[in-house]
Length: 192
Image (cartoon, rainbow, N blue to C red; front, side):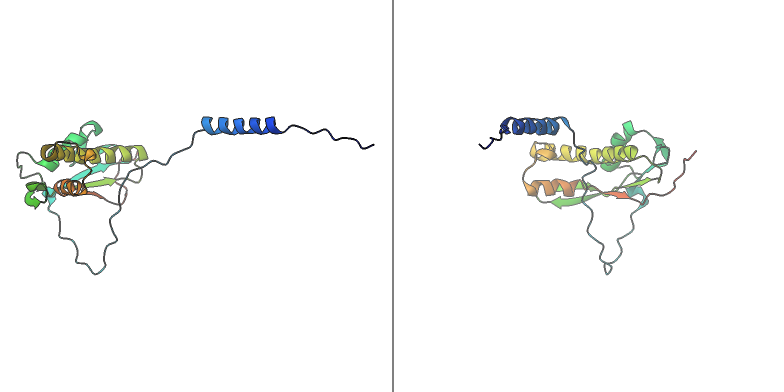
Protein backbone atom coordinates (compact mmCIF):
# COMPACT_ATOMS: atom_id res chain seq x y z
CA UNK A 1 0.00 0.00 0.00
CA UNK A 2 1.36 3.38 -0.98
CA UNK A 3 2.10 5.82 1.69
CA UNK A 4 0.46 9.27 1.43
CA UNK A 5 2.76 12.25 1.60
CA UNK A 6 1.36 14.83 3.92
CA UNK A 7 0.91 18.20 2.23
CA UNK A 8 1.88 21.41 3.91
CA UNK A 9 -0.51 24.30 3.56
CA UNK A 10 1.66 27.08 2.11
CA UNK A 11 -1.13 29.67 1.93
CA UNK A 12 -0.44 31.02 5.39
CA UNK A 13 3.32 31.19 4.66
CA UNK A 14 2.65 33.34 1.60
CA UNK A 15 0.50 35.65 3.72
CA UNK A 16 3.26 35.99 6.30
CA UNK A 17 5.87 36.71 3.61
CA UNK A 18 3.59 39.34 2.08
CA UNK A 19 3.01 40.99 5.47
CA UNK A 20 6.76 41.05 6.16
CA UNK A 21 7.40 42.64 2.77
CA UNK A 22 4.80 45.34 3.43
CA UNK A 23 6.24 45.92 6.92
CA UNK A 24 9.76 46.50 5.57
CA UNK A 25 8.52 48.74 2.76
CA UNK A 26 6.58 50.90 5.19
CA UNK A 27 9.23 51.15 7.92
CA UNK A 28 12.35 51.73 5.85
CA UNK A 29 13.26 55.16 4.59
CA UNK A 30 14.68 55.93 1.21
CA UNK A 31 17.20 58.71 0.73
CA UNK A 32 15.87 61.28 -1.66
CA UNK A 33 18.34 63.31 -3.68
CA UNK A 34 18.12 66.95 -2.81
CA UNK A 35 19.75 69.97 -4.31
CA UNK A 36 19.06 73.15 -6.17
CA UNK A 37 16.69 73.30 -9.08
CA UNK A 38 18.74 75.12 -11.65
CA UNK A 39 18.66 74.96 -15.39
CA UNK A 40 22.13 75.05 -16.87
CA UNK A 41 22.72 77.59 -19.59
CA UNK A 42 23.08 76.31 -23.14
CA UNK A 43 26.61 75.62 -24.38
CA UNK A 44 28.45 78.70 -25.58
CA UNK A 45 28.76 78.99 -29.34
CA UNK A 46 32.49 79.25 -30.09
CA UNK A 47 31.73 81.56 -33.02
CA UNK A 48 29.59 83.94 -30.98
CA UNK A 49 31.06 87.32 -30.06
CA UNK A 50 32.10 87.68 -26.42
CA UNK A 51 29.47 89.22 -24.12
CA UNK A 52 29.86 92.92 -23.38
CA UNK A 53 31.67 93.74 -20.15
CA UNK A 54 29.52 94.30 -17.08
CA UNK A 55 29.98 97.61 -15.30
CA UNK A 56 31.31 97.29 -11.78
CA UNK A 57 28.30 99.03 -10.24
CA UNK A 58 26.06 96.31 -11.71
CA UNK A 59 27.91 93.44 -9.96
CA UNK A 60 26.96 92.35 -6.45
CA UNK A 61 29.86 90.27 -5.13
CA UNK A 62 29.13 87.59 -2.51
CA UNK A 63 32.10 85.56 -1.23
CA UNK A 64 32.07 82.56 1.10
CA UNK A 65 35.46 81.51 2.51
CA UNK A 66 36.70 78.14 3.78
CA UNK A 67 35.46 78.96 7.30
CA UNK A 68 31.94 79.64 5.95
CA UNK A 69 32.31 83.37 6.59
CA UNK A 70 30.30 85.61 4.29
CA UNK A 71 31.75 88.67 2.60
CA UNK A 72 29.20 90.87 0.82
CA UNK A 73 30.55 93.69 -1.35
CA UNK A 74 33.85 93.54 0.53
CA UNK A 75 32.21 93.79 3.97
CA UNK A 76 31.54 91.01 6.49
CA UNK A 77 27.98 89.84 6.00
CA UNK A 78 25.41 87.67 7.72
CA UNK A 79 23.18 85.04 6.19
CA UNK A 80 20.20 86.51 8.05
CA UNK A 81 20.50 89.85 6.22
CA UNK A 82 21.70 88.62 2.82
CA UNK A 83 18.19 88.37 1.33
CA UNK A 84 17.22 91.94 2.19
CA UNK A 85 20.60 93.31 1.08
CA UNK A 86 20.25 91.51 -2.25
CA UNK A 87 16.74 92.88 -2.78
CA UNK A 88 17.95 96.39 -1.95
CA UNK A 89 20.78 96.03 -4.47
CA UNK A 90 18.60 94.70 -7.29
CA UNK A 91 15.71 97.15 -6.79
CA UNK A 92 17.88 100.27 -6.29
CA UNK A 93 14.83 102.18 -4.99
CA UNK A 94 16.66 105.50 -4.50
CA UNK A 95 18.50 105.42 -7.85
CA UNK A 96 21.84 105.23 -6.00
CA UNK A 97 24.78 105.62 -8.44
CA UNK A 98 26.63 102.85 -6.54
CA UNK A 99 23.83 100.34 -7.15
CA UNK A 100 22.92 98.78 -10.51
CA UNK A 101 21.59 100.68 -13.44
CA UNK A 102 17.90 100.39 -14.22
CA UNK A 103 16.69 100.31 -17.83
CA UNK A 104 13.19 100.93 -19.09
CA UNK A 105 11.90 97.98 -21.05
CA UNK A 106 8.54 97.31 -22.65
CA UNK A 107 7.39 93.79 -21.76
CA UNK A 108 4.25 92.11 -23.08
CA UNK A 109 1.53 91.86 -20.39
CA UNK A 110 3.38 94.35 -18.15
CA UNK A 111 3.95 97.42 -20.29
CA UNK A 112 6.92 99.64 -19.57
CA UNK A 113 8.86 98.56 -16.46
CA UNK A 114 12.24 99.25 -14.91
CA UNK A 115 14.53 96.22 -15.16
CA UNK A 116 17.67 95.95 -13.07
CA UNK A 117 20.95 95.32 -14.85
CA UNK A 118 22.31 93.86 -11.60
CA UNK A 119 24.23 90.59 -11.65
CA UNK A 120 24.98 88.62 -8.50
CA UNK A 121 28.48 87.15 -8.50
CA UNK A 122 28.72 84.22 -6.08
CA UNK A 123 32.21 82.97 -5.33
CA UNK A 124 33.16 80.34 -2.84
CA UNK A 125 36.30 78.70 -1.54
CA UNK A 126 37.04 75.04 -2.22
CA UNK A 127 36.71 74.49 1.53
CA UNK A 128 33.25 76.04 1.85
CA UNK A 129 30.80 73.60 3.41
CA UNK A 130 27.98 72.33 1.23
CA UNK A 131 25.43 73.48 3.82
CA UNK A 132 26.69 77.08 3.72
CA UNK A 133 26.86 77.04 -0.08
CA UNK A 134 23.23 75.86 -0.29
CA UNK A 135 22.11 78.36 2.37
CA UNK A 136 23.67 81.27 0.46
CA UNK A 137 22.20 80.02 -2.84
CA UNK A 138 18.77 79.74 -1.21
CA UNK A 139 18.93 83.29 0.18
CA UNK A 140 19.94 84.76 -3.19
CA UNK A 141 17.22 82.82 -5.03
CA UNK A 142 14.67 83.75 -2.34
CA UNK A 143 15.48 87.46 -2.78
CA UNK A 144 14.80 87.23 -6.51
CA UNK A 145 11.65 85.17 -5.95
CA UNK A 146 10.33 87.73 -3.46
CA UNK A 147 10.86 90.51 -6.00
CA UNK A 148 9.07 88.38 -8.61
CA UNK A 149 6.22 87.84 -6.15
CA UNK A 150 5.92 91.59 -5.63
CA UNK A 151 5.82 92.25 -9.40
CA UNK A 152 3.30 89.46 -9.94
CA UNK A 153 1.04 90.76 -7.15
CA UNK A 154 1.32 94.32 -8.45
CA UNK A 155 0.31 93.43 -12.02
CA UNK A 156 -1.77 90.25 -11.67
CA UNK A 157 -2.90 90.14 -8.03
CA UNK A 158 -1.37 86.72 -7.28
CA UNK A 159 2.01 85.30 -6.25
CA UNK A 160 4.51 84.40 -8.95
CA UNK A 161 4.43 80.71 -7.94
CA UNK A 162 0.64 80.67 -8.47
CA UNK A 163 0.79 81.96 -12.07
CA UNK A 164 -0.30 79.35 -14.59
CA UNK A 165 -0.27 81.34 -17.83
CA UNK A 166 3.13 80.80 -19.47
CA UNK A 167 3.06 84.28 -21.05
CA UNK A 168 2.61 85.93 -17.64
CA UNK A 169 5.40 83.80 -16.13
CA UNK A 170 7.72 84.80 -18.96
CA UNK A 171 6.80 88.47 -18.51
CA UNK A 172 7.67 88.43 -14.80
CA UNK A 173 10.91 86.54 -15.49
CA UNK A 174 11.90 89.20 -18.02
CA UNK A 175 11.07 91.97 -15.56
CA UNK A 176 13.06 90.27 -12.78
CA UNK A 177 15.78 88.12 -14.36
CA UNK A 178 17.65 85.62 -12.18
CA UNK A 179 21.20 86.62 -12.99
CA UNK A 180 23.44 84.71 -10.60
CA UNK A 181 26.95 84.16 -11.85
CA UNK A 182 28.92 81.44 -10.12
CA UNK A 183 32.67 81.41 -10.40
CA UNK A 184 34.62 78.17 -10.18
CA UNK A 185 35.52 77.44 -6.53
CA UNK A 186 39.01 78.63 -5.62
CA UNK A 187 41.14 79.28 -2.59
CA UNK A 188 39.75 82.58 -1.31
CA UNK A 189 41.40 82.32 2.07
CA UNK A 190 40.19 82.04 5.62
CA UNK A 191 41.91 78.75 6.41
CA UNK A 192 43.25 78.35 9.92
